[in-house]
Image 1 (tube, rainbow, N blue to C red):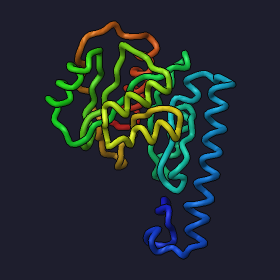
Image 2: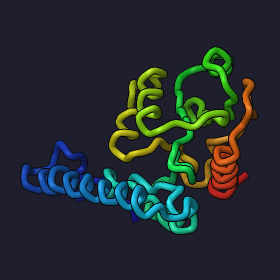
Image 3: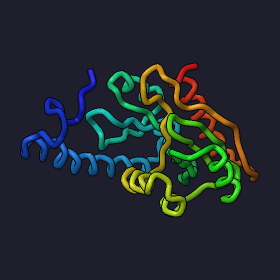
Image 4: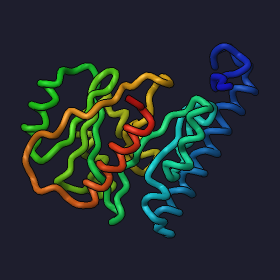
Length: 212
């Protein structure tokens, strides 16, 4: 059974200093070090992309994302965690993946048209996800792109800087409730094979995890 990260206290505000320091202070330092080791592993060992394409996050390990295969990630759903696909590509570059809440579909389509390129669009519980398929980026370019777009008040920038990649959720927020659906694509541009492979992996994961 999943418990909040402050368990057995109702919230982290109710925790005494020492338990709070251990749970949210020292643990975060350790998780940052673990994340650095994962990034070095991905950079140096260059494992097959299908083995590190998905992240698990949430639950008690709120600061840790595990870069693993989808098959390894699925069992974590039972622990109240979520699964996201990350932006890594076989070439070592990244796909541009964005998350925008609180806007209309028309605004999203107008933004994609103005930004240029080819975009695959998805409706979510509160907004939209979109993936650009006619370009790839270095990690620094990915971070700059998040800064320029300003989505989620630069939460995307924080995620990219901390984890070394961008990501989009593919599992439902609430078990058994589908909240991601594909709308199609918009814009023009010659689509890149390795990005289309990521889109195919994303779509397959959504269908598998979200249900009908």
